[in-house]
Length: 347
View 1 (cartoon, rainbow, N blue to C red):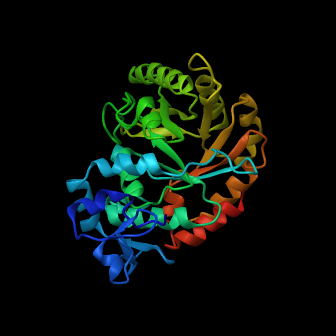
View 2: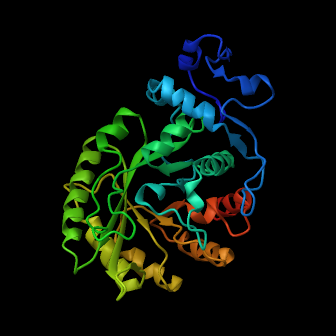
């Protein structure tokens, strides 16, 4: 089922609202007029708009289904075609979009780049349509939209679990589990979970997050569901801003700490940054035998430099792929398809 179409019979219950095809998919009036159900032709969003054949999301239709048939989300999840976590080559390419729920909406110098939900969904649908992209990481609101758009068939779906550490908040390191729970991920037939673990030796909130992380690892392992743990050693600057330490020493410590959490590490993966000095990654990745993926980090002007950092680290034996968000969804030149294709090529 291609992105942009409402999945299932819930659309038909209103009567005369669309036509169902042989797959049980009901299409909105926009589809009958040459559109694409919940999506249509992408006309762009001005500067920085995603280039390529991205569909345009019909927000009014998406909201209509949400308002009249909220059960359509669970129905779409129940019908979703699943796949193994890893592809035949044992690699993983995931697009991440769980930043907004933590209040982290900025990309580069664009403070509210991720605040336009229609545009974000369009960029995600475009990225997910590219060859070699295995799936998506996001919070419930975004994954629910993508389910209704039919964009998650045959994709790995990862639920984001702790978003309580709001960007810039005094309690940022007391990162409560406000997103998907293990039971939600199991109920919705999603494929994995992800959590953020930032450790500041001077902030007692880190201990709460450490303990909650251990219990989340146990809950996911009990269901035989992979959990991707994204650890950092973090510190506050003199201005009070939280900064992740990307030195080799700090990343080694974060790996050692997170690898030992929970009653089993059988289903634990690591989601790690490339160190300040990429040449340190070989030593850093010797810290654990847990499989790992690389994260994207902040968007900068040197996109080629980011690719080169990933390219080198991807040669290491424990690194199995990439989980990248803003760098691919909002590249400096606006070409989402090209950015995604280049990242896929690194694998």
